Length: 95
Image (cartoon, rainbow, N blue to C red; front, side):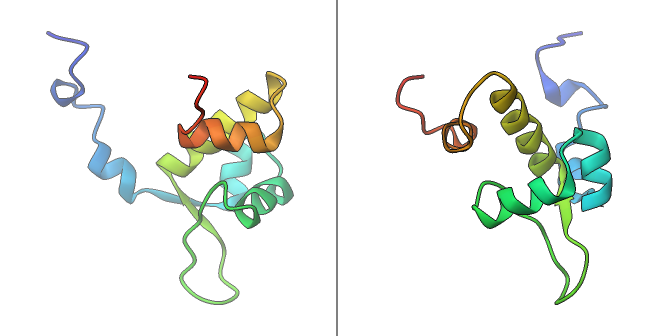
């Protein structure tokens, strides 16, 4: 079995992962990033949530959670928030 090909792996269902969404509290629990910080990152445009209407809970998908984890890791490695955000978008010219 070729382990490099995600299409052969039944545990890597990216269509399903895109459909799964969790609330901000669960994201905070999963990532270790406080809810207040997640909301701030969203205000800065670093991440995006899904809201079904005014006053509803923010929901985040798999890719947003992965991005939160990446930004957190970059911050832990000493990057500024702006530099971490830029790197997480993949637009850093020094890569």
